[in-house]
Image 1 (cartoon, rainbow, N blue to C red):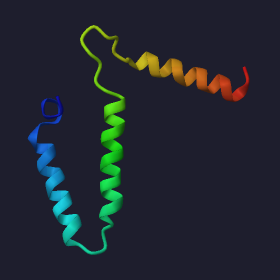
Image 2: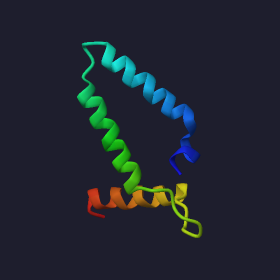
Image 3: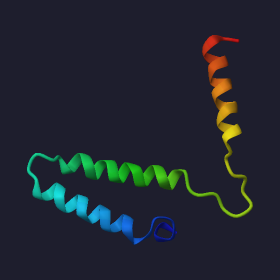
Image 4: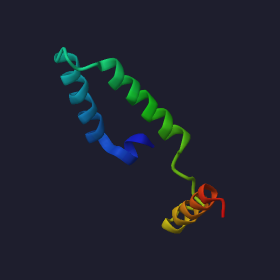
Length: 75
């Protein structure tokens, strides 16, 4: 599924970034690899919905924003 969504270009870009990171001494690769692992974990937890599941629309985000604002103002 990963390769279907992002393709091999993403893997090539990832390889170039890792190679540059390991070749330049002032880049903290621990932080970059931690971000990669964290991003993959976040992507896994928020997976692409299966067939038949409802997709999130812009109106869903608007509804969440309105509820959030109401909770902050106490309305």
